[in-house]
Every structure is written in C-alpha cells, then in structure tokens.
Length: 314
Image (cartoon, rainbow, N blue to C red; front, side, top):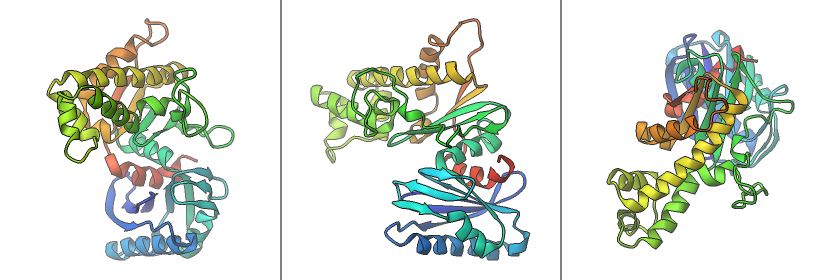
C-alpha cells in the first residue's frame, strides 16, 4: 500500500492507494497555512496515521508516501522551495514526513501529480505520451513523454499557462503580456462574460449576473446552453483562445492524448467539441493524426492517485 497526499491552499486530501492505483480510503483536513509549516505537516501526518489505523495497516507495510504541492519543488531533496498558495519557503516536507513514518517520501508539483494520476488511472491510462492542462484560476499542467514525467532541467517544465499566445496582449501577473492563462483560464472566461453582460443588458448572461453581481462557470454555461447570443459570442472567443494554446502544445510535444482538467472540463462535449474542431485546423501538417482530446476523469482524486504513483515514475 502507498499514500497519496494533495496539499491545497484550503484543504489537504490524503488517500490510501493500492497497487492498481485505486483509492481504498481517503480523508481531508483544513490546510490552515497560517500555522507554521511544521505544525501543518504534523497534522498531515495525523491524517495519514488515521488512514492507516482505519485500514488496520502497520506503518512498516507502507511502500512509500507521495505528496503534491503547488509551487517550485526540489524533488531530489523533497523540499518545497516556494509555494505561493501556502506561503512556504524551503520547507523540507519529505524529510519531516519521512522521519515520522520511516519510509521514502516523494514530493512533486501538484499539477504534475494530477497529470500522473490521469495517466495511470484516468483519461490517459492507455497512452505512452500525454499532455494535460488544468483550467482554473490559472492554467497548470504536466507532461508525460514516452512513459516518463518530464520535469525539465530545473524542474519547472509544465508551466504551460505562461506560454504567450498573443504578443503584447493583456498583462499577466507573472509580468509578461498575452499569456495563455490570461485568455483561457476560468478567471478569463468569467472576466470576458461579465464585461459582455455589461454590454448586453437584455441577455441571459446579464440576468444571471443580477443575483449576486457575479458570474461563475456554471452560470456562464447555463447561458450558453440556453443559446444566449451574448454568451455564445464569449464562448466562441474563449474556445478559440483555448484552442490556440492547445494547438501549439500539440505541435510542440506531439502527444497521443491531450487531457483537459479543472471544473470546466465537467461540461464535457459542450466544451470539447468546438475545441477539437478549432485545434484540428491548427495542427502542423494536416496529414498527421490529431491526438485525442479528452476531459479528465478522476476530478479531485487525480492529485492523490498521482502523488501515490510518484514512486514508480522517478
């Protein structure tokens, strides 16, 4: 048995995972990042211990623990070099957890763990090369090439949201302009939809915004599914921008499967069908088969499953 842990800004999820990459048990605690890192890690250890006791598994029977955390990770030393989400700086996460459970602890970026989870047990499980993007506040992602996680020279590969798709475009919080996530994240979709609602006061989009003065992904797709002209125009622009980034990633990495994760992926074919059509027009050399574009399958469990699988993909 192995343990997978997914550290988020709000919650930490932990799961007991078997050798077939299936979650047997899982639990969740609040992150409470305002506490000292050692305190947070201590509570994560308590959550792991609780899983082991519930499953009646001795600590010595654990093969390893895997942990996913947002930010820059030193995989060799199991160190969170910097995580903006939880304000950690040079935290020796692997060492602290390993000391308690006397087993090997692997630490990696949370988006890479989610990618690995989909690769071993989800949308990419029959592939040997896969690219995944996760659409949320920004855009994260991960790369698996020929059955190996690709981290790049300094472990920073997979920062796919900061690929520029529009020269001198909208400023990004990274300091550049025109980044993929500025146009294709959920944040970007909401921004464009709210601006459009202001221009179209008689639209379904504007009516849905009246409730609390805000839109979200669910409301926007509600308007899209009602064939609201204003929402459909926003959606067309959004899927074009999303397809632009996806097309470039496919041209660079030539994966078998391209996976889209995050909350919007739950819209299924309503989102995927127009993206496939637009991406197909951008694939270099039309004689080559286009990779299959799929929605992620594991949802919030991907990070746990992928973290637990890290031991086999070092």
